[in-house]
Amino acid sequence: MPVAVKEITSVVVIAITLTQIPAFAQNPTTSPAQQPTQIVPAALIARHGNPNRLFLRSSVALIIDEREGVTLHKRNADEPRPIASLTKLMTALVILDANLSLAEKIEITQADRDHLRGTKSRLHYGTVLTRLDMLHVALAASDNRAAAALARTYPGGRDEMITAMNAKARELGMTNSRFADPSGLHSGNVSTANDLAKLIAAARDYWLLRVLTTSRKVIATNWEDNKLIGFRNTNRLVHRDSWDIELSKTGYTAAAGNCLLMRTTIANRPLVIILLNSRGKLSKFGDSNRIRKWLINTELRVQSLKVSSGSV
Image 1 (cartoon, rainbow, N blue to C red):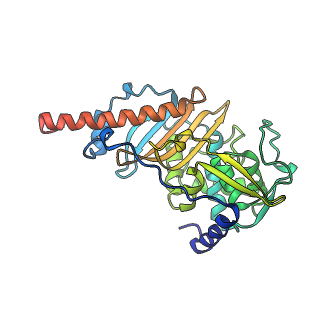
Image 2: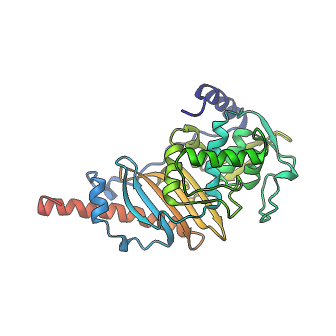
Image 3: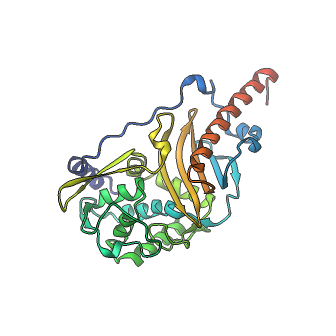
């Protein structure tokens, strides 16, 4: 595992005590009545699933059965596109790889201001958070100042951070990806759905990312005045009990459109879902719900075919 587990564990215990991060229970799956009675082999889902019934509003889509390694559906999965704040997942991987102290306090400064797009932040100048809380806010709340502060305090600074992000991409075989900043605001942050699937696969080795990306709320301590700052997860599906999500990141810029990546479980099937350039603020969530309905309906249809014909 790339992260020093012993060190991270002790830091997390301290951080949970100090920052009052609650324990987040795993969301329950859909009710048994809505699920197939058996798990259909992924190859049969890929064969019998009609993509015309998906009606996705995302121009790029990738659905992978993670357990069997089978692609259930893909659309323009090798098309390089800006990925907006999905970039922050790579930022987090590089921070964790560096084995920096997660208890170290970091101050937000004018250097963390978004001069490119002028985005706002609830982390005012002078706010002091631990590195763990900065990661939490950057990932769950997709805060750009938090990402900038993480890069500024990376060994060697922002430029070294970006170099490390691109080196990590090469290490993971993300051959069609490049990173230009730690937040995703720059349209030079480009990847493909297939490359992002490799990033998600790598993130499985970072157990901390599950907590940081799927918690419904972030309660961070501002050590400048000892007050708490609350944030909500930008992925609306995380807030729904009907979804069981193990990794999550949202993103949006005008160039990238609305973006979403997730590791999730639907009807006992572990999945990777990647949606890029989705039209409309809520369309990536609508597409996710359509994917879930399509998958369950396809499984039920394949099961009925097996019963009626004895073979599919």
